[in-house]
Image 1 (cartoon, rainbow, N blue to C red):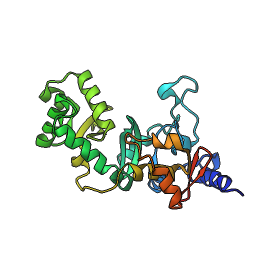
Image 2 (cartoon, rainbow, N blue to C red):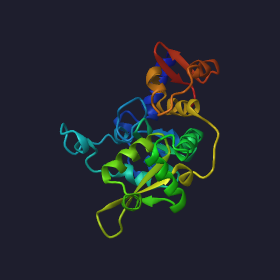
Image 3 (cartoon, one colour):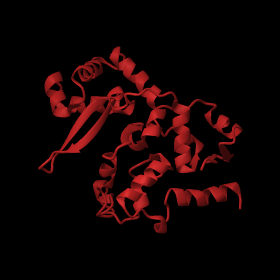
Image 4 (spheres, helix red, strand yellow):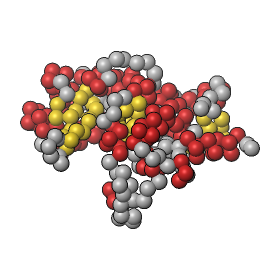
Length: 254
């Protein structure tokens, strides 16, 4: 068996690409997510996907949007995000991705650098006001932020999208007790992750490659907001941590 063929078998197993490997319980999904370290919600790239790993028919096939989510276990993503040490962050160029404490730490110096830039005003006046307010008031619900900062709903949504993408802020959604409503709480990165870590874009991309097992090199470089250095793939291959097969990178890490 060639190295690529062996890796394809390993990918099918690790990423649960076949129905017999479907996730059966929420606890099993949590254990799988922690083992992979980098997991998307919906399948849209080579990274492992929670919804794909469920192998459940969508609620309304062909309808698009939320109708394509798993018919009965659509809520698992939110439930996993509520578990300690699991974070659904918008660091995949604005798209959400599940990271564990360990893989989120790989992005820590990158997010802290963006937060420092926001504190200094480099990301605009509204961003500077928002992070300053959060530093003083602590994590705040979006309704409070609109009122206290005088921002309309659309302006705050756009601001959040820009800042969550680069890790300046982190948003968490909670069910309002006794109702079917949800509330979103916004915090600075350093409030959600108070302990600084040393890693960077290369380590984050490498964690993604390990999770995926196999990925096109060009895609892997653009998984996250911050691209790894140009020599990233060459260094992995030289260190024996990956193989290059045509335009693919194959992780050798188990």
